Image: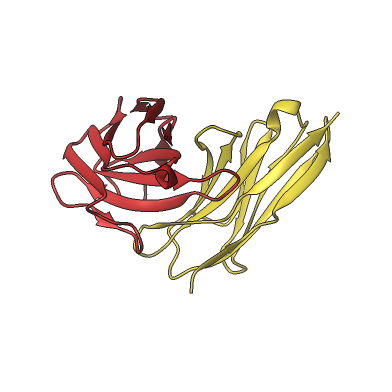
Length: 116
Length: 109
């Protein structure tokens, strides 16, 4: 299967700081990347969908000014959690999909964020 | 509305066979995916069905019936490492993935 990397794998930060998470497709071009959040023992929750070169589409209830998404190239998308608070502590997972809309989404390994 | 149903939890014995069912009601259908997610890790892709029938891949098989809005994931010769959550996801007419809540599979020796 296709390989998606995510960096960092784990981050601890102080409340009020911003954290940037990178998602890269290593062996394919990802027209579309997805950002998910998952709280312990809960389902995946889609936060936003980003298409290369255009603005991200956010799901209802997700603040676009708090979760900044940039998808500047076909292999890289970034999620910046701005002014992080303890309630933002979660497991953030990206996935990437190739050029065709019906292609499989492949997931990165996830980033565990802890805000103190 | 769109809905994916799968059992919350299942228990099976090492070496046995288990079938995890998934029923769905979505606006359009462009395929059904099964993913495996171990605790604390991201999901990994298992299978994709877009036509009716059974797709076999080693110890894992996935079945689809579009007319019934039904799929199952069949795991044979269960191993302890198969203990994980199994997520069913359907791609709707807008090519958006609609996720089930996942089935936690517990394997006992």
